[in-house]
Image (tube, rainbow, N blue to C red; front, side, top):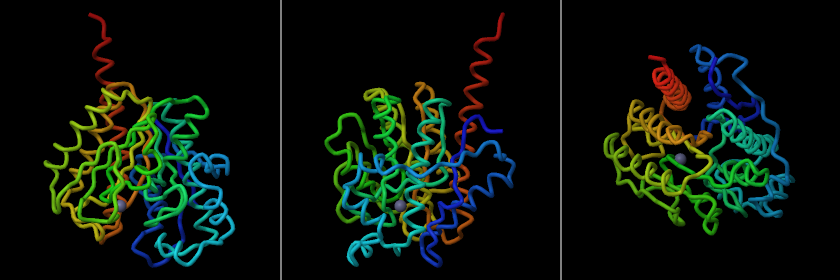
Length: 314
Ligand SMILES: [Zn+2]
């Protein structure tokens, strides 16, 4: 049994059919966690859809209405880069509910993991790059409205810049945004995050980690957030079809683990979401996302051992 909850819903699947976005990955990740004996039935929580009130703390009524009623214009669908369907709308409402639930679990348990979400290209008034609703922003604003948190730090490790996150929180002092991404990649226009770590093409594990970890550590100390929302992209992987960085699976797991360690060392809650992953072999994308959960478990286990040693009498 895991020391934290996994949030998953069978209808996370965006039902895209053959598409570069492997929308079946959500189910494959869940299945592999069970098959590998990492998680059992009791470890999973089923989210409900976010309410419209939750979405409207982030998105415009016009955009929420268009998604709900299927009245997007042709150019809006083109920008979204995925076909609109009622299943897609349901999936993104559920993903937002899932990130809210993962955030609530994180505040309670230290970690909470949504096996979906991370739709960081969604803006208040439109969707982009496979992202219709910004689940992480919805979750942060809901936790703030409930008084569960005051300040949040978003650490976005997707290979693509977190443009929606940066834009939504541009004037919000209660949310600090860090994005590490490949500079020469989508989106062409990158509204500034609080910290943007622009990686050159073909950067490898060591340079990536040496850039990311000190910055995360610095801002955990300076900003002192109540929660970290971790957008765990699988697409900095060396064999990704939409990415141009050269990280290995080992490096990606190390990335996750070190961010989690730094946050938990400071007793800061960590909510994780997925994000992109377009490896040639979908099994690689699935394994990278599974490793994020394993990294979180290892961080909890390591801290438990330290605490035990520290409190042993004599
Ligand atoms: Zn991406």
